Every structure is written in C-alpha cells, then in structure tokens.
Length: 320
Image 1 (cartoon, rainbow, N blue to C red):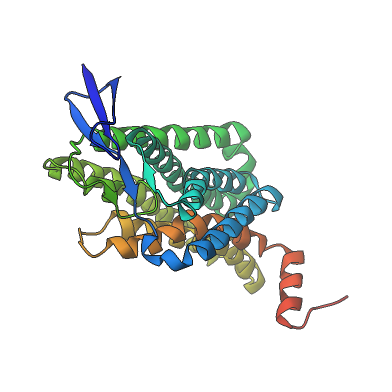
Image 2: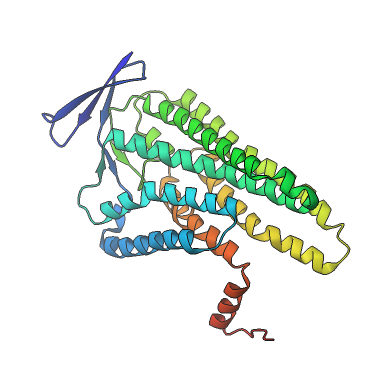
C-alpha cells in the first residue's frame, strides 16, 4: 500500500506531494518547528559557542584518548549519535527559521534511536567483559576472543537499529495534522508523539515496552554481572588486590549510572505536561555530556593523566 505525505510550508499554496511505501493510510504531515532553546534568544550565540566547543572536544577525545576495544566502539557510537543531533542544533542556534521536514525528522529519530539503543547494549557487553576479566581471568582470552567480541558488538548494533526501525515506524505511522512545534531541540519520541492527531495510547504502550527492553534488561544483566564480581572481589585476600579490582570497575559503573539514569528519567517515567522543558536539560546530559564523559572517566585511570590532574589542582605528586 502507498502513503501520501503532504508537506505544508509557509503558505497553503506551497505543497509537495511525495509517494512512499510502507504505511497503511494516507497521512497529512506538516513541517515541524524545533522550538529548542528559542526562549533563550539573547543567549543563542553563547550557546552556539558552548555546544560547538563541546562537540569538538567529544571528537578530539574519541580520536586521541587511548582506549581498549569495547570503549572505543562505545565512544565512536556515541560520537555518531551526537553527530546526528549537534550539527543541526548549531545551525538552528544561528538561524531565524528552525524548521525540519518530516523526512529529515524521521531520519534523525531513526539514527538517534539506533545509536542510543546500541549504546545501551554495548554498555551491558562491557559489564559482561568486566565479569569475565575478574571472575574468570585465566579463561578470559578464550571466553572473550576477538570473534566473540565482534559477534557481541554486531549483535548489539543489529538489535539496536532493528528496535529503532520498529519505533520509528510506529511514530511515523501516526496522523499529524495539528500543531507543528516540537518542544525540543531535536526529534525525540515523546515531543513528536504529542503532535499526533489520533489516539496514541496503544502505540505509546508498545514504545514503552520497547524502552523497558532496551533500558531495563541490559541494566539488570549488568547488576547480575556485578553481583558475581563483588562476590569474587570479596574473596581476594589482600586489601591492595581488592582496591585494584574495584578500581577496574569504578569507571564502568560511573558510565552505567549516568547513561541508564538519564535514559530512565526520559523514557521510563509517567507522562507529565510540564516535563518537556526539563527533558531538554536531561537530553543535553545524554547527548553531549555522556559522550564526553566516557573517554574522560576511563582516561583518569591512566597514570600520566592522574599526575597532570594533580598538578593542575595543586596536589602533591609522588616522585621516584
């Protein structure tokens, strides 16, 4: 079956009819306006500079921070979904028009969800990697071989983008005919769904179920892994050995709680009419801060970085 998507531009006479396949009914879709940080009109240039510097820092940190395999893949994936959002945000901060076509909005939504879901699964894979390294150190190279590692990464990516495809189809299959102002700085699920003209309860329930699958299932697997890890660490006889083992897990746990904490606040909470403005602040955390946090947190384990940080803070540095 075919769908007619009609883009309503500035004047009613300017319409473009595009035929696409994949949906069951004719849907009228208007151009969306990303409200974003429009209320901070006097700070647009300052916000542009801040987000630009943060974006460049993310790219530099990803490319130049020494990382082991899984962390590099996670950082690269997070840089990709940052690339899906931040460049357009920078353009809108300096532009009077903040419109985005339905096709562009759907594309942004798909890739953002794809990389975000992939990241949730990758962090769980990293938790399993820590479990094998601490609980089965002698068998680590056998259990976590390159072939198995690549298989887990591939499975995370394919599963993540498949879920993103399902979610995007559910949202894009809704009927949009009313207000076109998205109260966000990018096309996310909840702000776009609020603009639908039809009853969305069934689809919202399906999307909520997918959110539970993507967020809670990996998080529970991580908790189980760390249950075994803590049990193993407590059996280590020396205090120094326990300290080193806990230090190995601290950086990953920091990323876990920041990532899943922000995702839970946005996607696993009851509806709230007044939550949209706060959502943008939380969204800044998981679209900008978290991709920057991963290389930073893991690099703090590096002895040279620790020494440099102590010197900056004026703390005593041990010398030979």
